[in-house]
Image (cartoon, rainbow, N blue to C red; front, top):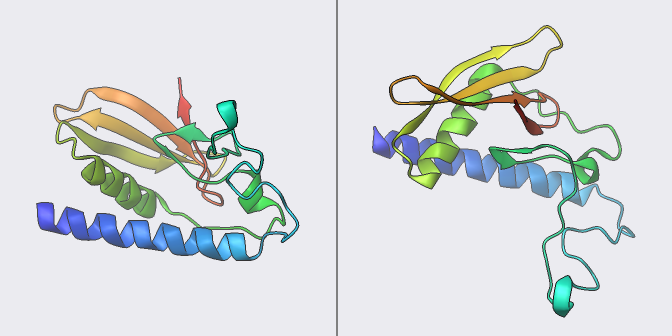
Amino acid sequence: MKRNTLIITTVSALALIGLTTMAMADDDRNDDRRGWCQKGGPNGKMMRGHHGGGMGFGMMGGPRFMKDGKYDLKLTPERVKEIMEGRLAWRGNDNLKVGEVTTDQDGNIIAQLVTKDNSLVETFKVDPKTGAQTPLR
């Protein structure tokens, strides 16, 4: 079981890296918002720039990746469940698991993070086009 989870995690991570790399290749070459702040962060240190509102269980998406409107991951509830299970496996928390993953009436994917005894920890809304995730509170 742990071996399969590790394989799924690795494949998911590689797929996301590939998608991100392809999206960045199409990005405007004169754009100064390439992830690293050009002038540095507080005290002159370099810092990772975060663009986008979808913070939650991991982060993906944001305006930088969706600028041209052609970015569509076509995520399904099954795929979102695989990705979230991979992230949990990567973090090594055996007390959590992915619960019910469904689609709402607006087309967004709703995923639940639960404990091993099925107690709800958090519910996330995932945009199937961008992968942006926001907690539902």
